[in-house]
Length: 337
Ligand code: FAQ
Image: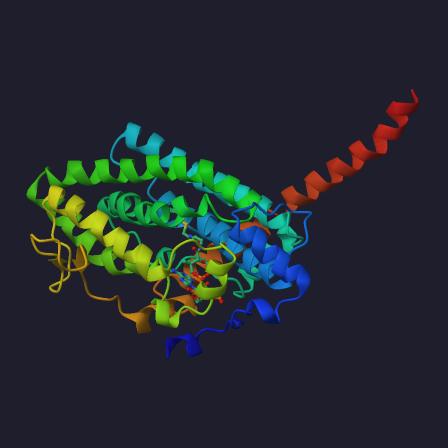
């Protein structure tokens, strides 16, 4: 039902008989776990899906800097400021690796920025929620980076070489980010009563948006089947969401915080019967589709900030281009001398 609400061009998977000989040979390489490299032949749909996913991922990293960067000056200690600043810089780096990986598929960075600024490209829904307190910064590290790692560790084995390699370093850094977030939460959870309340309030507001990061339920995921056949995605949205809940609930218990879900319950008995994971409530999917369609609490603010930064940076880009042209002009003269 919900898949109808998302503008997308996900089409069915071709059977082996429907594939051209080139497509069949390509699929055989994917099935054999070969890595596809930029100059090799690939189906147009594979290229298009990768550009969509990698550029959306890159945009998420760049937009994801915004909810955190407004806390750099308000972080409680100099050490916390320095750590948060380093994290925000890491996110910029992740965005740049990913834009480079997408460029190897034939799209320019200017085109990707144009898609973001015009609202045609998506970025992760999570960054359309506000960060209201210092505990939110802990929660973003703990839950948002935690969800990102859950999704991205398998992507280190994705079939497209440049994307898989970018993921290796990104995952290492995300892992540090997750721990710094959990550390903030540990301090707050064992702090004063007011700090503990802030930590609980942050968990209450971020729990369901974090679950939404994995995308719509498998039944409504338009791209999963084809992306998994091409190993652009390794796990399903619901499979990753389940793993995230199973990993995170014990962490919340360790912190002494309550996951805001009355239906949360471990589903397995002492004989190992049951699913061996938590049953939990689904996020509000109407809210999710509203957020990814541009109607979340902070969409206008986030996009506005990116467009402003782009426009105000025009003089700098022009300067760089003028300098590059000057260097290029000088080179033949230098070579002749
Ligand atoms: N938000 O058919 P599916 C981070 C869209 S990194 C927005 O299931 P797919 C680091 C989807 O694009 C976080 N849109 O799609 C950090 C599609 O629309 P389209 C980003 C979403 O691609 C931490 C439609 O719904 N990570 O956070 C979302 O197979 C802290 C149908 O959905 C990545 O991007 C969503 N949550 O699966 C930074 C990882 N979910 O394109 C700063 C790579 C779905 O047809 C601070 N991406 N949509 O118009 C992926 O693994 C996949 O793209 C999914 C979605 C799993 C996100």
